[in-house]
Amino acid sequence: MAVDGKPAGIVAVMDTLKESAVEAIRALKEMKLEVAMLTGDNELTAKAIAAQLGIDRVIANVCRGRKRR
Image (cartoon, rainbow, N blue to C red):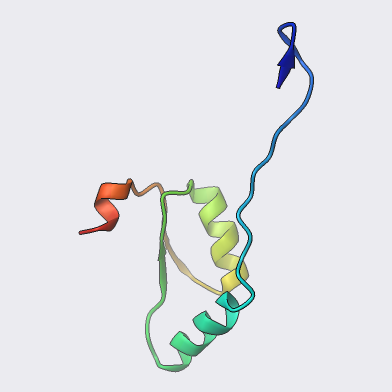
């Protein structure tokens, strides 16, 4: 943010994990399934979220059209 062309503040936006997400990933892994995260988020953000969920394979910066294939 800027006021009269000078820095005046910062705006940060962050998605939060659903309470059931960690348990859902754990259940998938217990079923011997490989879990991967495919996201349009940048790699740094994606890896941070994946780490919270226990996901090792992350594919970031995927445009919306490529997710549907």
